[in-house]
Image (cartoon, rainbow, N blue to C red; front, side, top):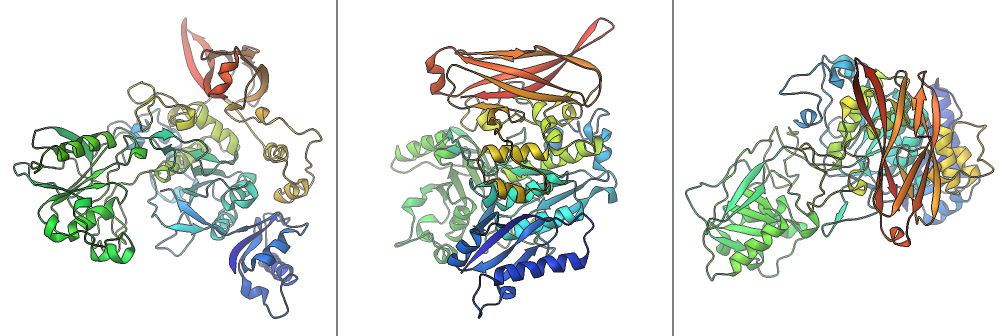
Length: 629
């Protein structure tokens, strides 16, 4: 038997639901499953959760054959395994421009949005420490509360319980949901996060999800690695910022390599220590299974008093192995796929993580002499907030408990966007989740904090495949001028265009009158704040619709195009008089030669708002990153 989720769509009962209604739903689930089970099987024993409030369905232990029969029923949207979801999971607020030198400037969205007063942000995580799957935080109970990132452990969640968390969050009335987990590229009806977030968006809840941390493979951008891809979600990638936890590896020839670490101590700068490669110090028949790691896999006779050089695939566990064998320190060399990213982890020994290229130089240096000269690895700026319920490395044999730590990945970036979405909801409670998303995306920047083009982890110029719309600028998102809005029916039309079963889509929605359009929409015309045109040849015309959420303004179109493609906007200017006024425009894209279709090219469309005051022209940039293939 395996754990399955049986998804039946949306409930028909209204927002005011009684315990009698909830019990009736549960009883229906038992009766429904009982019709598929044998006389000796009890459906109440098989079902371990019923979704009774907004999401209609249940999670149960089922034989594969029974699950297959249930999936054939006309009232069933989908049946899928309750798979594991990986949890992808502060100076960053200053980096985003919300504060300056510890003070809140008057133009900060924090100040203008009353620090998120009366906005409830729910975090869907492991729920450790409170016994709950969902943790919701009501900022109205706190004075000048600063929204911040939640620390997520590297555990997994069962998809069936994720749907439970969404169901409860909708029922409890959260405003924003921050979801730092996901499953690799499922179908929309086979993914609890996609299903739960759709039901949340139907109730006006903004759902922010992490994108996952698999964007690089062997140092190059890997396409199709985003784990949450539903258009009703705000999906967040991770960037670096101007915070470092540096230390330096200094060789005997005085060559230095910059590394990263959160080691509590460094080695003395006036003393040198010998190096040894981990591969030269393994015990006979050593393995990396849990039991072997607990006992140690390095030979103390070879390692004691030395600095061990590892590949960074084992991370903090490698440092623990070196410590068990009596090493004084550890150098971890990034694998090539990490590019120039160096994660600052709380190692148990003085440690430094260096990038792949520096690692190659270090290994070449070690191999160039019979007895490698000594080395030092002093630490500096080694600081870092963390739960004391577990060790900073999450290793069972690490007994340390520290109040501070540093964590990385899209699980840390996701709560930042959730916080920004919450602040926008305070300022604009009438905005739809799509308008909230559009404001964040279309005011983003593709420049870094030095006003240079954003680079990826390999130090090459990044593209929208790496940064999406760009890096969030929360203060600009307060007044985006125009938004690309979407309704629940737009999302349903999107699913119809993907040729999902029409009856299944009807079950997915709370709108009982919805039907798929007779002529399916073209996916390129889905009103999302970006455009993707696959296999461009000849020309194509794409339509977008914008809504005015600012004052009376006129916008002029400006386009940045690469060679090989021409882009025309019609009309080239849009004049808005009233708030809520909507206008459409067309984007005509032409390939100038056949070679342009062989690779990805990127275009940026900017709607520039023109205002005159005392003969001074004020330009406010409005971004729409356009992606053409």
